[in-house]
Amino acid sequence: MLTAVLICGATCLLMIASVLFFPKIKLGKLHISTYWLVTLLGAGILLLSGQADLPALGSALVENSAVNPLKILVLFLSMTALSVFLDELGLFRFLANFAIKHARGGQKQLFFLLYILVSVLTVFTSNDVIILSFTPFICYFAKSEKIDPLPYLAAEFVAANTWSMALIIGNPTNIYLATAYGVEFFSYLKISIVPTLFSGIVALGCLYLLFRKKLSASLSGEAQDVTLHDKPMLWIGIVHLAACTVLLAIGSYIGVEMWLVSLCAAGSLFAFALVSALVRRKKPQELLNCWKRMPYALVPFILSMFVMVVVLEQKGVTAAIGNFLGDDCAIWKYGPLSFLSANLINNIPMSVLFSSVIGEAGCGMGAMFATVIGSNLGAFLTPIGALAGIMWSGILGEHGLKFGYLDFLKMGVTVAVPSLFAALGGLALVLL
Image (cartoon, rainbow, N blue to C red; front, side):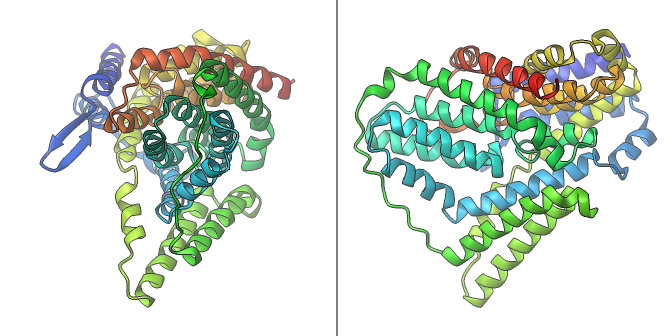
């Protein structure tokens, strides 16, 4: 047991160090993120050192269950593909530009409009996609307007990682934890909506108090026009995303798994795009760009962390943690603990680990939903908390904006902590 714990612990520490000090390595023209290389190395060492029961591990990877990591990856990547394709067609830039043009009341109105827009879009897409799409746009706009981008970047990041709790598809951590406990789409929504609303309102209030002085300056509102060049294809994409969301909601009632729904939706949309390009004799550029922008690093990262958690289960580590924590005061115990743990090992591996711990402790839905809350809101305590934070920090660096660990922690303490307890309070009310 000790050897496995040491290898997993060293892997997590090295992953944190890689994010903070050497996030990418350059191989020729390629810039490769190091966080997944570190976890892949850790999983490889576990396997090569004989710490894993290989037949049991293989069975866990291919078993026909909702918690199968391959199914979860297919679900998340398919939903990401739908959203990224819409972004390539200009939908998110168009909506952001629309908000800027209608912010005639100045920076305060723009701040609130942006928060609401990001919140709504995150609910139906995912936090990672919104951050990848909106962050560069905000950086460019703030530079052209000669205003401080930080209030808007913070609003975007916090909204994306708060409202991602609302639907099961908003974050891969939601997907993993909910499917591990057999929670269906509507059952998840009935419980998650109140904590999300509580947290979202508190987060907005905290953000405004934090940046109210910077938002007092005027705003010209003269944003650049964003033209939608392929409206028919855009509408086809919107219909696919809407249909996919509806089918995900009713999938459990008609006996269709969520990963299959999302895969078929993404496959159908890509087929439409390819046929459209062939008919019009044009290069399917949006489709090609979509393939390039997919978060492929998530595959080795999740699989590597899954291997480490399975090994810890086999060694009895998760059972020991579960027995230590117990099942009393589950919401107020597992919520803060998952929130902090996400910032030690990242929210995805934390969710995989806590899924097993909660099961060993015999906890109910309260512990599971509290962990969902911690996995989402932990993203804006430190940059380690989620892949969204790692990507966000990288984009800011590319635009010459400094937002260091201490800046992240300041925002986290003033916004994330009140939001966490608001969400947990909402969850406690729902589950009374």
